[in-house]
Amino acid sequence: MSISRKLSLLEADIQKVQFFLDQFTPCANGKRTIRIEANGEFIIVRNFPLPDKYHPDSIDLVLITTGYPQAPPQGMHVLKNSKNEHLLDQLQNKFGHTYSDAMVSEAEDIDGYSWICVHYQDFKWHFDLDFGDNIYKLLSIFSALLEGEKS
Image (cartoon, rainbow, N blue to C red; front, side, top):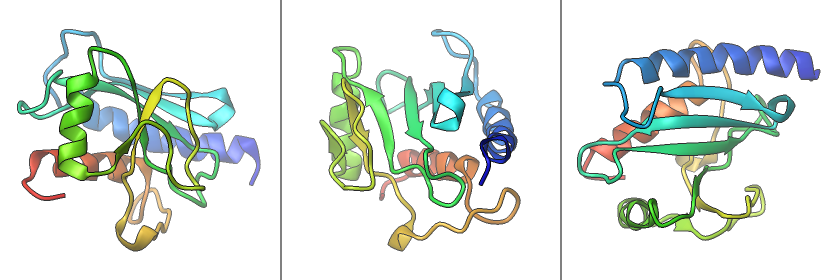
């Protein structure tokens, strides 16, 4: 797939994510945004909203999109710093899948970030912007899992 086609699909996908982010109360840390970086190799979500039981109440996420749209992002990355230390503990307790670095061969490490293993059941991904799997759906499912009792 050409880079221009990938970027076009990513742009359409992140427009849906931005609409999702805009539904939440504004954040004290600034606007909730998503942007494509490095020619579509990764995306950054700024101030992703977290339920009240999590502290801080928003977090920045990095999703590696090298295989997109044929393959989903392999989990999410959260900056390791003192501000996020408690949150990373909470995510570990919730998912049991938070690591200092990427633990599976398909996931890419980012120095200074913790990796959260978030994936579709049976690791299946059927990309479709409207009716299948996409980044908007992945992030909305992540949000719903954070709200719920089970993961």
